[in-house]
Image (tube, rainbow, N blue to C red; front, top):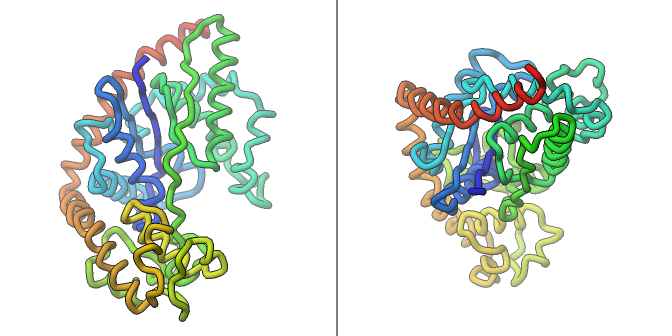
Length: 334
């Protein structure tokens, strides 16, 4: 069976360096390394987004912004299938069918719901509780062979496999492929430029804490220059940065941008202070991010083209989804 990778990302605005290095760049690598007979399907998980309250106008803007960003970062809609989840109704339809197979006990064990609902579990939406079933539908719908997962999503892929196994057994079919995990290369964990113990986040009130993908060269350089560091010189090994979170973060950003290990960065820069290291980091960040920014602004200025590309991707996705959805209805006697 040819390799088929399916992955989704929730549409948020104001994407930053951490989003790029932590997730989107791995999509680009998967696309570029896909065998000729394989396929990548990447979707904007807009149905997942509504499990919590959103301002409708903001959500609509974020969907286009995310599409522009993904393409700007290197996803080619001619080589990968890029689409909005909501434009393929089979996602929602199959999710409802799979709700008859999934078990409340399985969902009760999902740790992410406990984390996201916090102390207000009774006030959380049904969608927030059941969204792992929609995630299962997202991948089973396309007979995905592989799904990229980080540590926080391994449990959800196991649920998808459990649902597929039970559906196949209950209906006496072998309809659903059981997807295997792809553990992407260690995703860079990018921390705040103001606090090396907190993740880089768009919700941080300080704009200086993050490098946005829309920042120009001068802004990137200024943010790195002002980034929190310490007075000590860089050591020879990454292990020696264990108690220096800000220094570790800046070295980690350099390593992620350059595609090398922190130890390799330090082999070149050991003994330097941040007065020397920060300008080198700024140059590398500008070199990497400026082309992305230029493409992002081009696509942002042409929403009609973005909509056309997403519509084309959705049409291709609907064609791939139709046989599985029809077979699922048939297997259930519907």
